[in-house]
Amino acid sequence: MTSKQQIVPVILSGGSGTRLWPLSRAMRPKQFINLVGDDSLFQQTLTRLAGIDGMADPVVVCNEEHRFLVAEQLQALGIDRRTIILEPVARNTGPAIAIAAAQLSADGDPQNDLMLVLPADHLIHDIPAFIDAVELARETAEEGTLITFGIAPDRPATGYGYLKAAEKESLGGIAAVEKFIEKPDLSSAESYLADGNYYWNSGMFMFTPEICLQEFDRHCPEVTAHATAALAAATEDLDFLRLDKPAYEQCPNISVDYAVMERSDRVKVVPLDVGWSDVGSWTSLWESGEKDSNGNVTQGDVLLESVNNSYIHSENKLVAALGVDDLIIVETHDGLLVTSKQHDQDIKIVVERLKQLGRPEVELHRKAFRPWGNYDCLDDGDRFQVKRIMVKSGEQISMQKHFHRAEHWIVVSGTAEVTCGDKTFMLSENEAAYIPLGEKHRLKNPGKLPLEIIEVQSGSYLGEDDIVRFDDQYGRS
Image 1 (cartoon, rainbow, N blue to C red):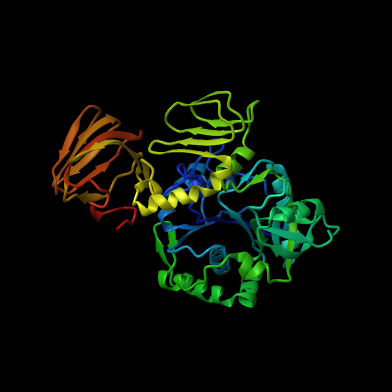
Image 2: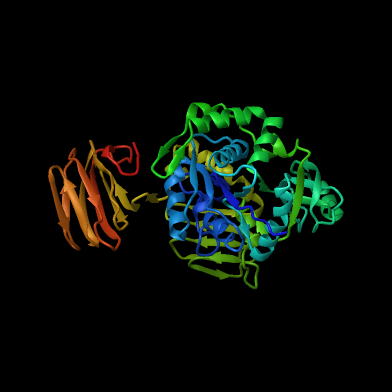
């Protein structure tokens, strides 16, 4: 029988991806970066769903700091979003999934819609096999089962949680889940691989909103109580749904596995053998990448001689490596990481050290993205800073002023509409404007092409927090 139920993708995009520093940072984590191919991991998560019948517009649950990245990357794909739900604080996958289920119950068909819950930062190589697995899961999920997708292990990995399937049923290998297992030691992982009935826990699920909420109510009612309260008091902000912070803060910080999946008797597993990676480390990116004859994976301007089994990523400069093996080398505009593959799980120690030192490289790239475009810090020194600013067609920065700096704007390409005090005027290529300290001002791109300017700041303090906004179309305070 052909299914008539629609599938609503629920994309969980709350991660910070610190293990992929210096490329992944708090304000632009790994799911929004083009690590493999021309699209980000977030965009690939959505585009691989194109071959599935009855796929609805997605629901995205994300950190409110990433809301414009989510909206921009959806727009770049031409995908309409059903809802973008903003989490005011991180509360793990349990509350995020419960919120999405409650939202779908409120505006959809909770008995007949299917939620396909997907992390935003996974890599899947065999897309046809993935689509087949989703279609296989569909009918069983429609019958009221909680489906989890288990990754067929290809090595005795100790960095993943596992689940054990009961004896496989006749329906294409779908089986009841006997138990969930924490990350094992090597000996246990080797035995799981040999057994054949153990799978890596992928964090991907399928179920109806109604069954999802019923199982939360049965096994972890405090999640649904506070999540539904946060949703009931949510406010709309542009294209986003802002959850009520006081209510959402009361949600326990708990994964959906602990809250529901490990406790429910309605869970079944659909095996996945699709070339999967959670891209949880530079080594995992090396493992899933296309290697040269010496086992190296490279990206960017890289020159190698007598190098083996290494991952080298260049974002900005030529990176040359000679006579080394098993290294991770990652170069960005403002950071360089060199480590052995065996120590790449310890990158979080470096990130923590940077936090303690108050270094901005934890949060921001030198090139920062904003809803109106981006800016790149080209140079800085005592009492000056130089930026390249790009404003997208039809966009504008907020009406603002600074207490501690003046600015000079030089148009490199495009057309600028400049507001400075009570005057508004146009600038073309090679023309410039001066914004005195304390003067209200705004930059707008009225043209069809991107506007690029060079901004020279001068003053006693040049931090990004020296901004007083009077009017902002993006709702920023």
